[in-house]
Length: 294
Ligand SMILES: NC(=O)c1ccc[n+]([C@@H]2O[C@H](COP(=O)([O-])OP(=O)(O)OC[C@H]3O[C@@H](n4cnc5c(N)ncnc54)[C@H](OP(=O)(O)O)[C@@H]3O)[C@@H](O)[C@H]2O)c1
Image 1 (cartoon, helix red, strand yellow):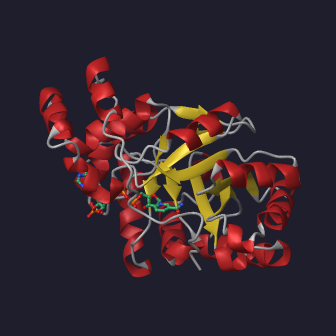
Image 2 (spheres, rainbow, N blue to C red):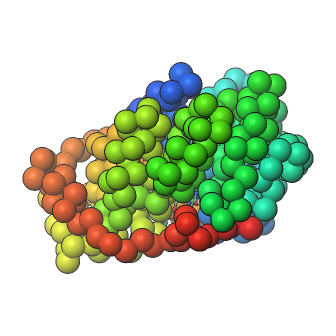
């Protein structure tokens, strides 16, 4: 065992607020990101997180580790019954499998790898505007929702023009838009559009894959020192105060614990504003206009 008492785990899980979505579902505001963890390594990472109180995991077909995630869910009993009801499982469709029939076939395969009967959120991974199939894909997603095999439908990396196009073709706004968002890349125009249309914003790479821990020539580090917390906790707290859903990734138990423990302090208005002021012109990841995650 990991030495965390059942009481501490229950308290950690209970401390994470839920964000209400436009389909009335509620998503835990913190989840564990699963990118860049090998299939053979991912099960203990997920098991540790569940043990620490994480009740939300963020995966994707493109991460090539759904089988390992499924093994962790089965080993811990989080794939069925009451425990399953307490866990939010997100996964994403591969861009190469967008389209009506291909999305339905992909979903069957993903569900069987994950060893669950439904996923909480299924997402279009990239808009691929140069090969736009999101409208058709969405129709397959809606069928899965009708069948009760998916609860909430989301997209990732959609710019306002892609959200508008999807809405025009389907009459729906997604419940969630998962976008790259961290202190040095705040995408305020996309966030404002999402807020205006009732779409919840979920920040991926919430720490810029670690690069933002040193942002602002020590700004983050100074704030961390003032609160006796880590730079990671300062950045994650900033996201939480903004009402953003976050999915920090760590394979390390101590970091996972830290990343969940962001409810025992609050940033002052000046500190929050100092992080707002770190916004910059450089993304850490890919450009939604040109990228495809085959
Ligand atoms: N939809 C999309 O297109 C998309 C794109 C990218 C990411 N995502 C999702 O977002 C998740 C998170 O993004 P990300 O993995 O790119 O970046 P991130 O969460 O911003 O950063 C992860 C990096 O920070 C380190 N780290 C984690 N906690 C730390 C702590 N407390 N102190 C110091 N370092 C820490 C991790 O190292 P260790 O693991 O070694 O601890 C890892 O190198 C992904 O896992 C994935 O689920 C989605």
